[in-house]
Length: 456
Image (cartoon, rainbow, N blue to C red; front, top):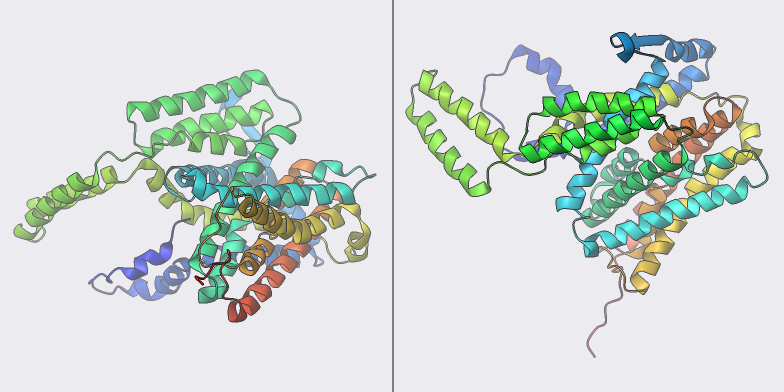
């Protein structure tokens, strides 16, 4: 995730304050908060729940069931607003997830096997154990296909809680949760592609994969303009959607074809920029030479930044402040009033809730301990096992991905309602318990994750 707070570390620009700044500055300060996306997601969820549990519930569902069409001739598509969000906008979310996965594999926490082993093995436990808990709880019912619901972590909410906890949580723990959530996303995408695809139209899928190949070819040829990949991406999305495979998979596939290389190396960039700044300083204000230097400097900045980073940077605010809140607002509106008692004994709600609230932290913590005890991985420095367990509990906040998989598993009906109630209850409980646990351990626990042998 892009760190918007980095802009606060730079010297503030010296410029004339405009009247519009007084209006926009509060919104800019909010957007620069690391937890801003999680806060907006929470507000959208609460708004959806309030509306769906009011006497205007029918208007809430009617709003998202309105049909909308787009396209030309045979390439037109008509879906409800709810489907456009889940099939369309969420593809952008998964595209961003794919970019983050590629970045982490190339230069991040997943760039080496030694670095990646700990969060990868922990994430594996955090998907297997919740799924097993769900299967055990729902055994004997017709709700077995919802086993994928409690598998994933909502990275926006989990990291938002860690940011709110502030300095009580070490940076290495936040890095661990980020890497774990990204591996979670990889596993969730595989589950969606393999287990939640009912019927495949192979010609459409072949066209989609061929367009992915075109995008990869553009990468090899040195195409760096994001608009080129956007046009190819629209074709990939439409073809994959028509194939029967969920369109969000198209976003991840396309993301892996985006160039991650820079056109300029660091030394060339520094030398060129110094010469351009010297030209700008020597030129008269607002002269042709000054503007030419500025324009050329802008081009150099684009060349030194890879398309992957540039696209990720551009998409991040749109996903955080539009796509995910809109998804929450359209999917979290479930009727809780009158359904609490039914949910308390329904196998789907119990399976999802127990899988997220108990299965997730136990699976992550247990597999993390096993990875260290067997010598396969090394835990983060300066992080105790109790803090890892607290962070694992926060990973029980499933929300976005859980609601998404629930819609694929159950479509519409009582099972979908129960799965949403179970997801919301478990996410709320995991968030509160994980926060309280980390706050209490933050005051008392300063022991390292691996015992240190002192010299005798």
